[in-house]
Structure formats: C-alpha cells, structure tokens
Image (cartoon, rainbow, N blue to C red; front, side, top):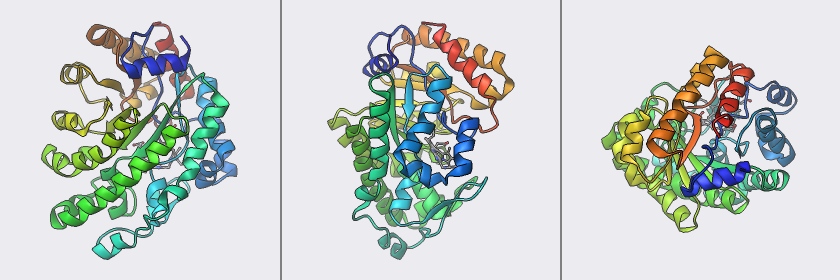
Length: 344
Ligand code: 1CP
C-alpha cells in the first residue's frame, strides 16, 4: 500500500495491511542534518522559508519508513502572530515578551490580520504537498487553546504553569475570553493548512494534563469544540493529543475530535473500549527509544499485537506517547519504524 493511501484509509476507518506510522517531533534535534540546518538558520527562518521547512520535514521520510510527514512549524506561531513576541534562545525553550495577566494585555492581542500573518505555514504545507506529491500523508497542526494560554500567561516553559491555572479561577471570564480567541484563530489556521494539502490536523495540548477533569471540561472542552466543529463541517479529521491526559479520557469524548493521540501512560485497551469508533494514535514511551533498538522493536511488537487484538488494526496509527527526545539515537528510531513495516 502507498503510505498516503494507508494513512487516509486509517483516518477513514477502512481496512489496512498494517497501521500507518509517523512520530511526534520526527523532524527535530535528534537528527544531525536538522542540527546542521539550524546552525545556519534561525528557527523562525526555517519555518518561514518553504524550501527550508520542506527540507527538514522530508529528512525523516528519507531515513525512516514513515507514512506521513508533519509540516515543520511550531505551536507558538499563533502567539507570535498575535504580537506576543516569541523567541527561541540557543538550547533553551521559548520566551514570550508580552505576557497575559490583565484585560488590557488581552486587548493588545492583534487578532486582525492574524490569518495573513500565519499564511507562511499554509505556504509551507503547500510546498511540502507539491514536493511529496501523493506519496505521503501530511499533518498540519496547532497548539490547543489551553497550552497556548499557558505559554501566554507564563511567558515561557514551566513545570506547573501555575499562572495559567490561577487565572482560570481568579479571572475566569478573562481566561475564557482568551481561550475563545485562541480557539477561533486555531480553527481558521488549521482550515488553511487543510486547504493547502494537509490530510488531517493535530491539536497539541501538551499542558492540558495539568488540569483536573472538571476544569478541563469547563475551560478546555468548549474551546476545543470551537475548533473541531468547523473542521468537521469541512471534512477535516482532527486528532487531539493531551499529554498526561489519562485522567481526562471521560471528558475527551465531548471535544468532538475525530481521534486521540494517546500519552504513553494511557492504557490502550481502556481507550479503545471507551472510543470504539475513534482513531487512536500512539503511544510508546519516547524515553524507551533511548533504551536502544532492541527495546524499540520489542515495544512496537507489543503495541501492534494490542492494536491487532483490540481493533484488527483499524482506526489505529502507530506513534509515540510524546515527542522524540533530542538525545535519542536515530538508529533506535529507525528500528522502531522498521519493525512496524514488518507487520504488513
Ligand atoms: O532549537 C531548535 O531547533 C528548536 C527546537 C524545536 C523544534 C524542532 C522547537 C522549539 N519547535 C520545533 C518544531 C516543532 N514543534 C514541531 C514540528 C517538528 C516535528 O514534530 O517533526 C512540532 C509539532 C512542535 C510542537 C510543539 N512546540 C509543542 C507540542 C508538542 C510537544 O512536544 O509537546 C510544544 C510544547 C512546543 C513548544 C516548543 N517549541 C520549541 C521548544 C523547545 C518547545 C518546548 C518548550 C517547553 O519545554 O515548554
């Protein structure tokens, strides 16, 4: 089966020879060529030049047996385009200059013209689609509203994103307004990526798992529905990844997502029993790729056996439970993908 045909069949719930595979952060710092490109170009420069973004998005496809590419970009394109001033220092996480703590901060967000300022991402998707033709699936993506809200309030990475969680309860109206704006921008942004050639889109809620189910249902689910509803109306499948979200499975059904990218701590069988008709993606612990090629192969065999037994391989996509760690040996990643292809 052609990789894109396999990816599309999985998204539609059709029979496949084996589940398709792609990996979160498949184009990234664990690849020597990526690091070489980054020595010569700034992060935003790589994202903004379609030739460079396609180059790095294709690198993993050339080395590994993958069925889909993810556009090279970042979830922080959206706050950057809304005037929050996002920079990536060497070897550290992102920094945001204009953080959100008051209603005045929110009024300063530049929502007018944001789609135009984000158009470089759909241009990157278009360039990638033209280059890959119909050989591979393509995923577009965006940060989920809560995760972007978390960076906007904190001004950078954090272990607990306390400012965001405090704001939800101290200024709930402000938090809800911010989440609604982020959701509406994401809906339009993802639709543009689909129009440019993405076969499906993924929402990354990397920090959503910090919330309990009640807060997730109150603040995140309504914002997520503002994204999934218009995309569903356009026939664009939306996958939702919530890191550390095992306790949120009961409320995720209400998000309207077409499928779920499972964190490594989620029990696959439990998720399948809860979501018999949804796409499920995941969910090998990415840290275990650092245990070497044999462990990587073993984990794939175990996952595929579960996928076969519970789902006859239908509506399943092989992936990790979070992004590849930058210190991972590319040979272990190769072994992981190769093992998937042995099960066709
Ligand atoms: O120095 C560098 O080269 C920058 C490292 C890097 C890369 C490779 C960043 C900065 N972003 C990216 C690309 C990226 N980011 C992709 C496309 C590549 C691919 O997947 O193949 C994607 C999908 C993302 C998404 C992303 N960015 C997320 C969600 C996924 C996740 O890993 O949880 C998050 C949280 C970010 C924020 C971000 N951007 C970059 C870094 C180092 C971080 C994390 C910062 C933190 O710890 O808070």
